[in-house]
Length: 339
Image: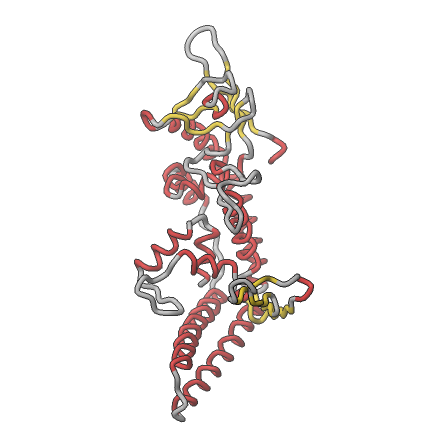
C-alpha cells in the first residue's frame, strides 16, 4: 500500500501504477478478473483512514419523492464525527502531504464532477504540472513572459516562445531542445561537482538521516503494537472458524487480515534492520564519478527530473541577444530571488 503512495508522489500516473501492480500480480483486497483499476487507486490515495482519521456521519440518504429512489448527500462538516488515532497511521505525514499536493494539481488540470464540463477557468498549465521534457515549464520568454517550451518536433525538437507560436509575441527565435538541455544540465553538473558543494550536501544528508532516525524507536513500537493487534485478530478469526462459525464474509476478513499481518511483519523487520545500520557517506570521488553521468540520470525519469530542476534552478528567463556577425543566441538569466 505504501508503494502506491510513494509511486504517486514520485510522479507516476494512476494508470502507470495500475499497470505495474497488475503485471506483477500484486493481489488486491478483492479478487477481480480485471485486477487493479485507476478508480481503486484513486480511492486509496484519498482515504484518510491511512493516516488514522476515521469519519462517521458524513453522509445520509433520503428518498427522492419523484422517483422513489434513495439518494446519498453529504452533511455539513459541523455534523461529522471524527476520530483520530496516531497509532492507526499507516502513511507518514510527509508522504501524505506530498500526495495531497499532487492530487490538487491533477484535479486543477483535469476538473471533474457534476455540472463541470471541459476545463474550468482555474485550470493550471499542463506544461507546468506535467512536464514532458527536462526544461518544460522552467523557461520564460524575456520579451513577453510566456513559457518557452517545445514548439517543433523536427530534428529532436526545438524550444521556442509559446506566445510567439500563437502570434502574440515578436520573439520568433527557436533553439534545439537537446542543445538547451545540455547547456543547462552541464552548468548544474559543474556546480554540484565542486568538492565543497558535495561536502555540504553530505553534511546535510547526515543531519537529516540523524533526525529521521530519532523517531525510529517510537515508530517501531507503534508498528509492533499494530502487528500484535492484527495477530490477535487473526487468532480470533481462526477460533471462530474452528468452532464452525465460518462464513463468506469471515473468510474475506481472514484473508485481508492475513495479508495485513504479512505486510506489518515485513515493515517491522525492515525497521529493525534499519535500526542496526549506520549511514556512511560515500567518498567524494565516487559521487563525482556518478555526477558525471547526470544527463542520463535525469533523462531516465524526465517528468520527475524536470520538477526537481525547476525547484533547484527557479525560473529561467531566456533573452534573445542580436549580433552583428553570426546567429543570434539566447542568454539565460536565473531569478536569484529563488535561491
